[in-house]
Length: 124
Image 1 (spheres, rainbow, N blue to C red):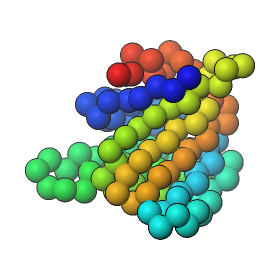
Image 2: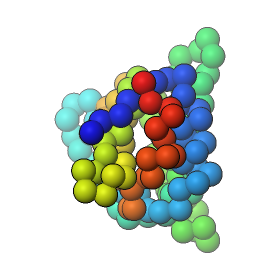
Image 3: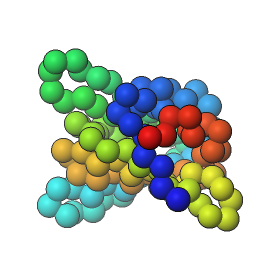
Image 4: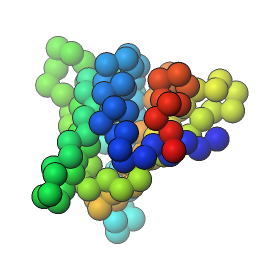
């Protein structure tokens, strides 16, 4: 099952994940030309922030990963326009997040997945 998060809830969505999720993530980035790059694999999530830049262009989502004792690895998504979660049929958790943006598609896999209660009130 897919669940789209409307833009008006992106700040709350990122805040819930940042404040409540204590698992690891893997991040894959597919650039506009189709080049795929693995950003991180199975790293602890440190921060996940949406920053709306008002009248200026270039809203951003920033994801930082890594052990708390290390300098984080940062992946920034510029001008996101669609955020979609995919639910695992067996566990009922949301295991994958797809963010479409000017900078391409970012796919985030959560280990373990997100509990449905964390995100369902933010759905379209």
